[in-house]
Image 1 (cartoon, rainbow, N blue to C red):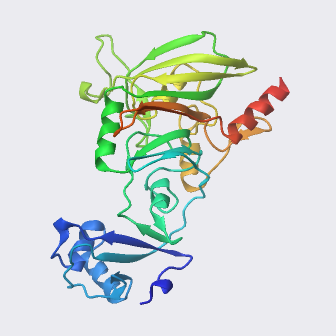
Image 2 (cartoon, rainbow, N blue to C red):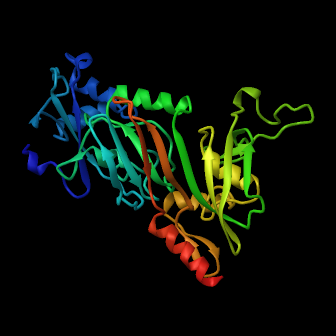
Image 3 (cartoon, one colour):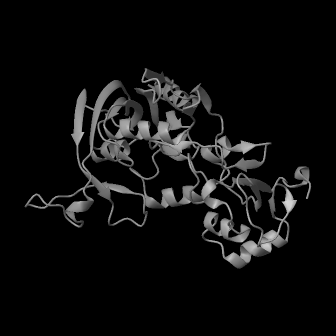
Length: 340
């Protein structure tokens, strides 16, 4: 099968490179390790139908693989929600990649997102081939709808160094959020432990831990309690809204979003916190807008990672990156101020 005929608009080509520990393995067994949810019979049929080739040559399920062989898998591209691929590279070298991520761009494949994710797009070559040998390692969390500075490791050693820095609080992160209501205090240190929400049908939803009279957590075992602390400072008060700066001292999932909702100032546009579960579930199928007030809505939540500093994993130089508010959030603020 000729290389130029492999990909089509509704398909993509995934490239796997045979590594030292995979030499001598049958092709069908090699694929079974990569696609654990697919049956061996299904994979054998795909090989026989020419949807799997080795070095762009027709192959058999029993073919024995050699070091650095290229295994090409032609996959059907399913319908995925639209995303914003307009990310900007802030810095790149052999060890790290730093980008300004837009809102509405998932970082890694999950659920209905595969091709329309940052990691897959970074691995795309020849417009429609996904080369899995191009390494990019996620070292810290940033939600799909959160925009701003994101660093990835390009080697396992660089990634390990960055992960260690995040775990040991050697990094410095700051976020900007637009929240509902006018916050009275200029500064708040929110020290509220989190856990998975035991009463929610949404698996990823977090919740402030509720304590009983004895100081022990209700509904969940103590082992599931995650200490979490966020410093919040007021940047500007507007009519009905507040712009705040958030500095997380810990890195729990959805930490800033849960903490702000907990103090009665949820982030505007947030479909999971400060809104009904129904809205979040609708958004899984198609991106929906949140009506903030009559005539004013947002398709994303108003949380932006505007500053990140860390030590370069190789040179140990301290690096700092900043990103201005993206147009969608700036336009929202302009609309709010024009009505004041």
